[in-house]
Length: 80
Length: 193
Image (tube, rainbow over all chains, first blue to last red; front, side):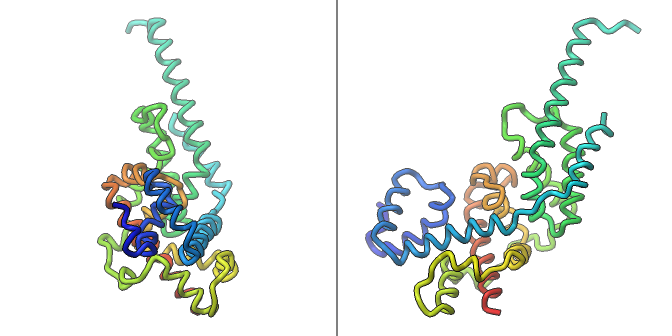
């Protein structure tokens, strides 16, 4: 039973995170997509979640300091 | 003492080659490991130390790594274990917060409420500063943050994350769910300021 029948938006919210994580089965994914195709309320929230994730990933990206990189390479030599 | 045989020499040469290959692969992954380590640790300084300890341990126990398996996950397993050992977890047990009662769309709803109309989802970028995201993430309790950082920043699957943290997949899912709600709650507070 898919569960989209009673309150499809509640079910869609429940499936949203695993859907975005690509952890749903093919069948579950198709059901979620079918609902998103027809529901602008959920689609707006879906697009928001996609943007938010992308932004979190970008905002938290921090380059490793060069000095640390050199320290790690030096550890290899020390241990030999 | 007997002279080493040519078989011994070959074996040692082969081992040395494997070791160098392992070290090079591990160092090649260091940028990706750091991306995750930076947010598992509480500060840049902690991340720096944690990376060095991880690589010391990895270089020493390289023979425990099975070639062909996920080396990045192997390194992060060492790193998360060290992070726990170092007592970096001030909040060992997950705390219950009122956020559990809120919806997954809490942040969206908050932003839309402020906007007073259906919102262009890209506008979130304009409302959240990079620092506010980093700060909000740092406020997520460790047990939840570890899962969130591995999945959302490290791009690990639920199964890999479960293996790295040595917890069941179901626990990964429930912690991830709560972690995202907590993060969104923190961000919503940030935009409300």
